[in-house]
Length: 374
Image 1 (cartoon, rainbow, N blue to C red):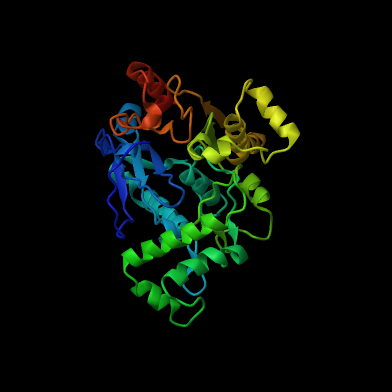
Image 2 (image 1 turned 45 degrees about the vertical axis):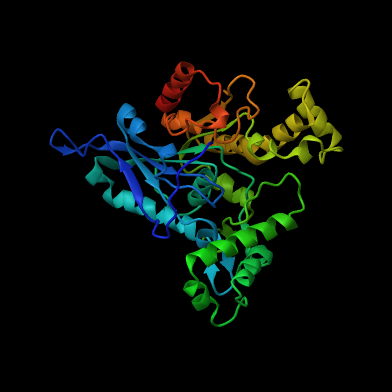
């Protein structure tokens, strides 16, 4: 995606609103509202980054666009006994949506015409939020949702990573003063502990194809219904709203492409029938191609197709897409995140993005115009 200037601050629970105007004909404009939940593996990013500038969408499509920040990493998604019950970042998103419902009329928006759009972690957040009875938006746009990313059971989340985080802060899990000591720790120490816990998580991972982030939502029994399977919860959530959902063609290239071990993996950790399937789908496929196609389907595309089918079966409008474009000969192919500059028309902010290098600007603008209109 290239470089981006990100200011880091704990005072982050803010919204950014782009509007063509607050009134029309002497009264509230009542424009449709698009609420954006950014991605970043629940670890990084922000709704106010230049990458996600909503000005063109707001102007060209006559919308009110809202970018949302939410707590990230350990501050948003740590589960540690006596310190944090997890899912704080999702609660931030809920709070932001509640704010939009109450206040967006003052910015020319119609609280009855809200679409929530997210990418990657932001998109799977929408899936999680749709499982809640508090959801009220009419539509959802889910870009590259990692649909196989299930909330961690508490008994798993309480284990290694939460303990590793507290250990890095020299805090005993479950001790009476654990919360007070964690709250007293300077942000620099919290971020260092977060990094230490993430490294520990990476070193203990057993699946060479796993791209699961270290800090993710947890199945707490309150925010998530743990009395039924995650697949059943998601099937029910998919029936709640009209949806546009889709992926890029080589999502997993963003995660696998830089790993030389995967390109040389022999034998591959897949069954013979599955290897044959992916080789037939992409004649002449390399080992990396097979792993990327498998990873893209397993983590992103397969679950997106299933979600659309559940929505359509319930009588919802369901639009399924795939983004295939990439610069000719690009080593990144149509990787995770390549659609973002097209969604927002924010090519200036992506001027130094390797994934776009070699693309023809006029052609890219044409794709972006069509995508933004859709």
